[in-house]
Image (cartoon, rainbow, N blue to C red; front, side, top):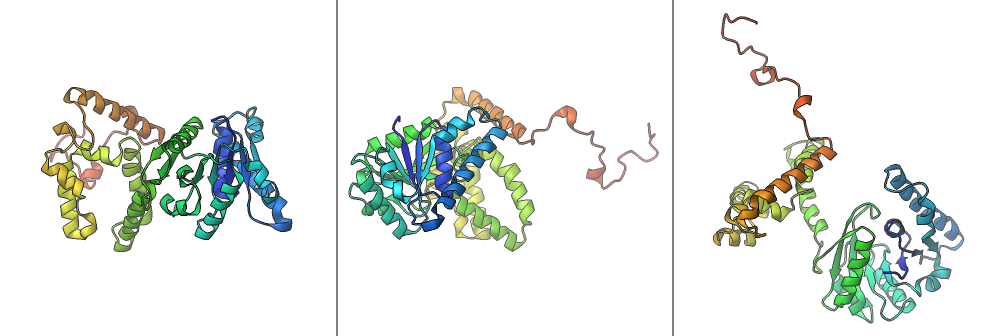
Length: 346
């Protein structure tokens, strides 16, 4: 997309999106729609400083050169309410990024429609409301969808794109094309509460809190287990892919056990039960959530193991043989010698 992009909302999300777009070589104008009176310039200055800070972090990380930083900053413009309509008029796409208050969303979407061209796509960034609900606030719902950026928006690659039943396919395509062009990974999902990531993480976060409450482990131990045993693994294998990898039967039986011990929330999903009944237990049966030809299975597994090793290596969790200390046996025997009585020390 060659047309400039506008972001309505100059808060943390708007600033992050602007930094991502500017870094992605797209001209972007951030519009602060709040009437701040005498505090306007101070607020806009603080927003500019935050965007610059996020881009300077990319320089320190080696993702952006010091020489390229001014060019990225030049692509990002921040204006107040007085220049909002003028700055938005030529936008090829507008992201709505105002606070998660329904009345504010309604007023902002109405304003955007009045300020942009009749065909301009509008993408809300809401993390709370369904696009099917927000579509009631616009005259042309076919150009509205949701693009849920994950924080920090300038760094996280995933954006969940959620169209309503009325959203035109061309609007979905144009939004995904823009996101891909600036280095993001768009994933299209239905208008459903929690989308994908927030819905999954709500379950996991609450379960972690329950484990602390029940005394299963302390917060530090649970978080360590998640970082090392959960996060690194699912950075390579998605949740459904992992079901196929380990076998649907493993999840099925484990879920029934946990349901009996901990409650109905742990029961197997109907689709897990259906796959079990159909004999689609994953890689060993040639099919599950994914279909992998038996002849391709060894190569697939080798590729995934190599990718997993790369993730572990990048996070300092991959141990090499030469760096491991020689095991003395003391930890396993409580410090007692395993030599036969009367045996030589040599």
